[in-house]
Length: 177
Image 1 (spheres, one colour):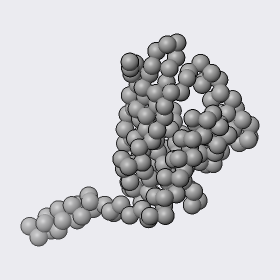
Image 2 (cartoon, one colour):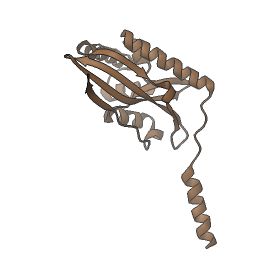
Image 3 (cartoon, rainbow, N blue to C red):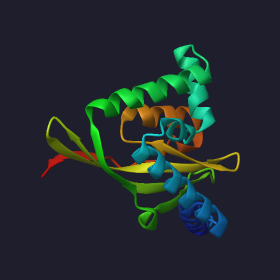
Image 4 (cartoon, rainbow, N blue to C red):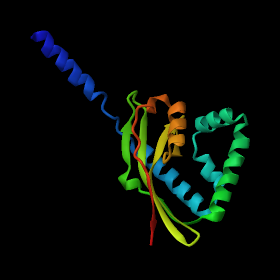
């Protein structure tokens, strides 16, 4: 009976895992700054700055898979964003920093999920997309990653294996008036 109690106690203690560490005020301020830079860059069509928000490890992974250099990939990303936004008018975009969820992967890697909203118009139809943006610190710098489709999530999980078991929220996209 004692052995059973001890086993159950250890399972419960192990189940709770390591408590998520507190994010410092400086980390939160830096994240807010990164979000503000990203939002401004996107609204102004500064795709160079938008592309810089992607973690270098993610860019390196994608470049390697595509058989191109990182700078070539970055240029291609910028061109694709310009093409995509040529047929779609971005009416509004924001990340809700105040509703961000501060989390920790099973190995202790800190990350943040930020509710994000895009309002676009294409061919006279308004479309609202709601998702979460993944924010993570890599080598002391905050980066932002879109996680609204399986391909993006698979890339993130390949580059950051500690996020492999993390469940990311699903996004929605719907026509609006």
